[in-house]
Length: 325
Image (cartoon, rainbow, N blue to C red; front, side):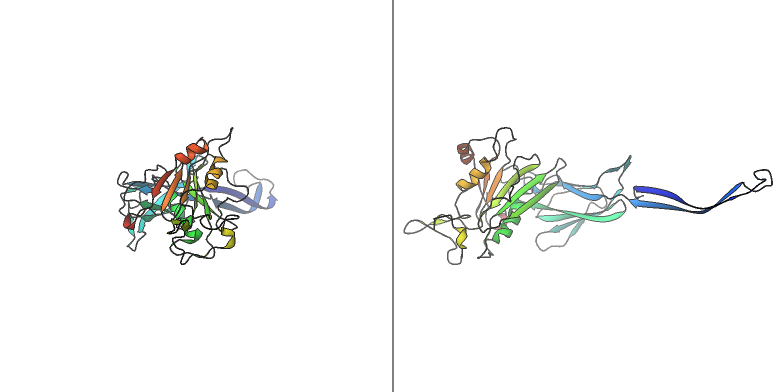
């Protein structure tokens, strides 16, 4: 039975008075005419779908999905919630599979990356919610990349930046990612497109990286890293096809220094993270820089600039079927 607000009204008609009434065999003293109306407004509720993890690998091969209504209560009563079906749709061409019948939770051991979709009746209204699960051949070694949807967020930012393998050569923009997760495990990625090519400074004012529910951030380097040239200096790996807007170059510089193609995170990348490490504020969250070959994990916390540089971990994206993203 749906929950919601109920109102009842009496649409009063004329009043008729009768004398010599309310005695045996006599009419009632007063007669009222009119009608009654009852209005039921269904409570607004959403469908929540939370996985126990967003990334699985041989060390953590299973994931449990939990569906629920938001809010879970309406006054003193539980919000009506009834699972209809769980549908698992592989990223690769494959047939969607139904799991777990109409149970409120569903645990599976996936063999390939896919989207799990929950369809349920929430306060009498059918709604659907989906979440992507990434399957890795092996863990990356980074606890956030191995559990939260950072890899999906970074890949979405990379595609928005101009996929290095399918680039929009005239407009390769670095993109900035913020990942926020609440205490229930629900996560939201926000990707910012920058106003100028090859820059990744967040919008003004930038989101604070020390906000409690911000678990991490990242940005893209949309070019393959520079390579040493035969005669000295550096060249673009994709120099035969790459076209750079003039404002993509750093002021006063030509190759080898350009935004988005440094072989490692740039000094500006570290300065940005360090700017959030201020007295009186929580330590900033970790930051990830994604280029076509590597993920650079820059630690959060309160660190000196030198310690942050020295503690950065390079995670190769890998090759073939076991490529991380």
